[in-house]
Length: 152
Image (cartoon, rainbow, N blue to C red):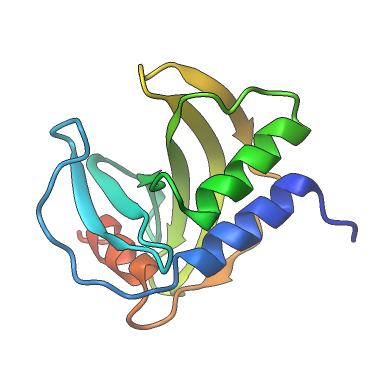
């Protein structure tokens, strides 16, 4: 299977986000976003608790938001991906990702990615090219997202 540039982006995002953190109540510009922790590149990760839905009994969906810092390696990767898509990364402020979580199976996958500028306008939106399930490791940021999404 040949990987697309978007697949590499997803793989990079997953790798960058496996640094564990304890949830802390904070806000990312809007009241509905709750701070979860920082990636290994010190990019802030948030979840939108009100977005949780359950398309089936063991599956939860939740939106997450990553706000890359100005000098972040992740920001540079995102800018590179947008450039390949012939989209301007000027003013890139944050990325929202629709996550799907298999609660009892401890797995996650990414369904949609939306890139926003500082004014809150969409730069680009795409269905994820890589919708394979990834393991949620104990102590990772994804485990914190799983805990919030899989509460009954």
